[in-house]
Figure 1 (tube, rainbow, N blue to C red):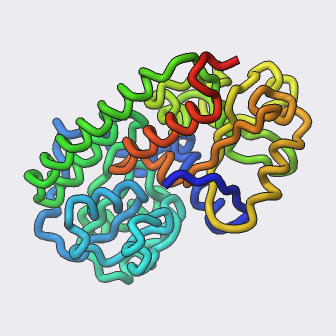
Figure 2: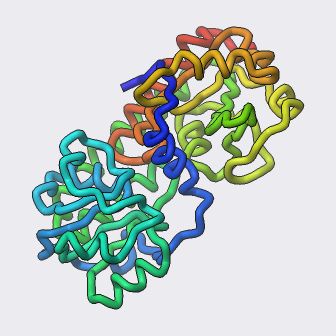
Length: 308
């Protein structure tokens, strides 16, 4: 659901910051698993730990949630998942915490770790499925293919893949029909007044591409602090941020009163969009909806004509 709120909630911020930085962290216990390659068979496992928000969403979307015994702290959707025991943050897992769940398999997003934990779990004989991450429509479909194949639910995966193919194509087509070339600056953080923005190769950059929006900054990968001069030069038409629960009005004021952001076309016209971090950047079953909502919100703020 589209959010127009901003948040200071520290716990949520930690989780979504970790999600956004997923592109930057080296893949831990990395697997190049893809649908055409060998995927571990956990079809007989009935005590599965899901690691990674999109992985958990996919397992629920496939109707396999009754096989879950635990999740990681980035697995915040659907609401029912919150009732599962939390084994910790995706990149700070402990072997003891995971093993204490009594699980018989792990389905984890590529990059889960740290490496030492993944090594201990593998040496303990725990079957581990590593799900590849790519910030594109195809990347979402590949995730579903791997999860479905590994968990013995290929038929269900095929149905979900076909459904999402249509939804993703429709969302991108609708976004492509939006007139004008709108520059969007994704601001990950404004801590201490420093603008931490998304460059290339990130989840934010990926979703902007799917929504046929132009990343206002380029020439670097990952997330990078921008000087006031760089923000001014970027001249975004829209500022995109993550939202959650909590007192958010002060955060919006912080954006609008920032000496550089407030002077941009986005700041002057108060064109600021906030969306839930996992929904926007998760690259899972809800991404088509997120792309559609982002594109619609941009159209509403910028107008039917070309961005100025």
